[in-house]
Length: 427
Image (cartoon, rainbow, N blue to C red; front, side, top):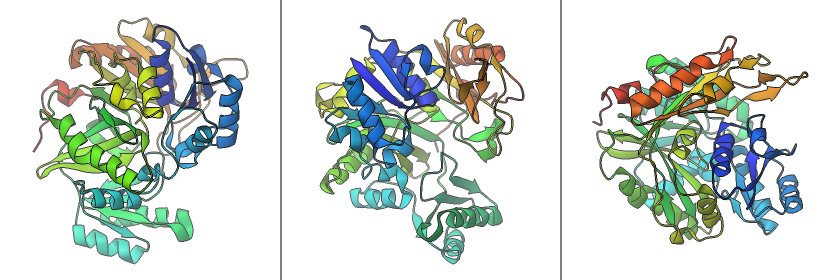
């Protein structure tokens, strides 16, 4: 199959890596891709957010499937342009992607579908934000209504910090600015990706990611510093519960509104003392979780994505998974997340991948003028380790991280550590 993957991060590299591992081999293309993806797919210098350009490239290639990875192209309507060109595309329409693009819209859909989630106030002024903060009390949860590259949420006991985040977000969006203030949800968080074709929902396996930059969940929120799967501590029947009470009702409500959701419904969950609650929806695979999840997938990914793109998910059946554990550790550049430094040489990837059970996915990399690999973003690499259990997977991943050379880089040393020790509990 000829497949075009749109995007340039570790999520897209994970998708390409999974597709490249299938037998028979596919003809893979990426727009614009990155140096790591270039080893497995032909790159095309096309703006991922330009729907007309992506659709034109897909036609020129004779692509039989287009996979739109990041949220920004989805919200910009890239999937619509490809779909209008008559090419199967995995990714929701711009209107359906509002489930991620607007927290307020997602709350409205959840209310209509009777989906359990946090109580919330949608605010358009700082006075409304202040009243909502006082109504809920600490810890304060403040979310920018629009896309913010995974860094639009602040959870803090400091009311002044919560207000400052709200003011900055409102100011950045001008007259259209909206803030969602929510009640705090206790309990561990879980990510579950559900593949959808507008009608049918097929779940993947749950994972857990780590948003804070430092060990012990210290420091500011990031796009994600690592993830792991499986979650041996999760309640039995969690996936079935999420499909029945959350994902399927949401897909049904979107269809009722005349906005069918076809693509990935990312369900961010909190397993609270009052039951399972939705923290957020996204309209695409989550990064860094999908790097770990896809490493366990045994059903060919291409067939599943094509089935979702063509309304045939009901024919797929349950997905098959490896029993292995997988841990993904993100290597970030100096200064991330506040002011990441770019242009530093990267070494050691080949040595890391020579280790048993390790592969490395590129997130923020580029080639320098002399052809050397350098950092080009905040999150630079995902080092994915697989093993018979979490201890073995962590050992593999961190052994790979130790091989990487990137001046000033940093990573968390505690990804999946609490789970390995059996210390994660559900209230």
